[in-house]
Image (tube, rainbow, N blue to C red):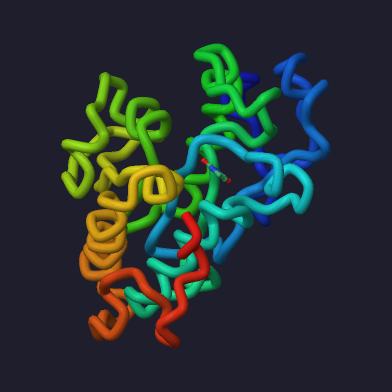
Amino acid sequence: MTEDQPLLDDHLEVGSCERCPALVASRTQIVEGVGPIDADLLFVGEGPGASEDERGEPFVGRSGDVLDEALRDAGLTRTDVRITNCVRCRPPDNRDPTAEELANCRGYLETEIERLDPTLVVTLGKVPSEHLLDRSVAITGESGDVADVRIAGASRRVLLSVHPAATLYDRSQRDGFFETIATAAELTGTGSVDGSAGDGSRGDGQSRLGEF
Ligand code: URA
């Protein structure tokens, strides 16, 4: 282990970190990745928002509701997959993480990817897509694309996706997002897409996010 490759514990938890002064000041807690440490499917978001900071779990706010719906439509639940973020502490005022903050947290993400060795990594949004592909990404156009990328010492299959929050600002992105999550389930041989709610509506016909 080097200082650049911090050690996560057996549960892949960072535990404590003070590398980013602005994030240490703004966070309530470190938001660790969740889900089985041998999951085939790893979702990588940008960083915790207010709900995640409060509850200490990734994607538990409105974006998480959309992700949960899409997983359910693909025949998965969040207990089947691992969900993590590029940075584990909430940036102030919901700003994007800086390049330095992303770099400070990179070792944790790489260690998590290396230990998990997932069949597929799904990047949720522009920030994680650019961070892992190391190039600029036009995420709306590239969502659904698959790339083989060298991460943490091995070639990893990465599926690009828009961020679930994009479906809240722009409803036209909803079907594409749900299709991408279904593709993730197919590529990993997990889940069971039955198409019963493939339009993103809940099985009971009530969209939890219908007011948006
Ligand atoms: N958005 C993210 O990118 N990550 C979260 O955990 C929640 C919202």
